[in-house]
Length: 290
Image 1: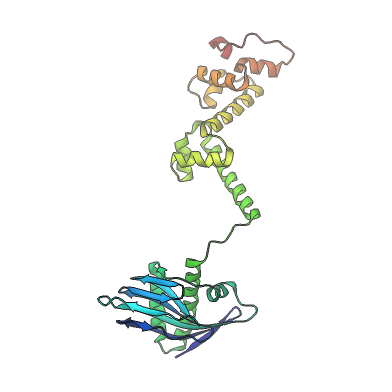
Image 2 (image 1 turned 90 degrees about the horizontal axis):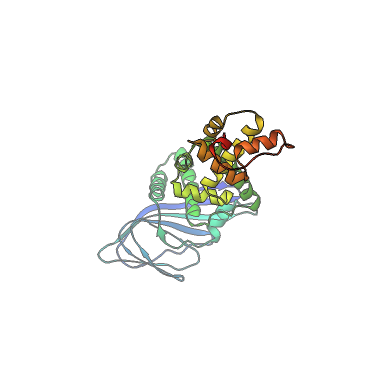
């Protein structure tokens, strides 16, 4: 029973779907032009001989044979090979879809396949034996799904264009900016890592990749920018400013501020609010910090 369907400029014919047990060496049936057979080993061990070499076969091995290449199946004498086979004929028009063209234009060496590939084979064999017309429709859908999964398994991942990569990086940077803002000046690297869903070490690597800096330096920059804005805006006390910037003590805040701006918080505010006035000493004594 052959079942045919068309898909995006290609004509596909399901010639046969069956389970086979190979106990001895056998030559694979020849395929006509455009013909191929999909194989999924369910049990046993052996070797597939082809012009490309000898390939070991075992449970869950997927492979494809096609015209006009000769293949020879050699099972182990103590482990006959049982496999599911789906034989197809695929012909293209000029406007054929890329996925089916990739399938017919490339060789697929035997490899271990994920379990859902075997489930698709079993579904196709079941639907092939059903006489109703709607089973023919579901069979066509299952065959397309199987071909798609095989191409996904063998094809290299698509290259991301430079423009798309730029857009992705910008999107990631925006998300990272938002997370940094939400963690804020009071958070830790562990807090950021939790928000990103990674370990702290990985979070640090992400920051280095996007910002070229560590979390500690980035957080300090945020704190100092916030501190400068508070000092420029009004007469906030140094205790309140330090607390708002995430510091437990005024002394630690004053030391970090001077390391960043070269002056104490008090001197910075005096210079900003009255640029013409000469400030006193920039020592980090408690009186000057306050």
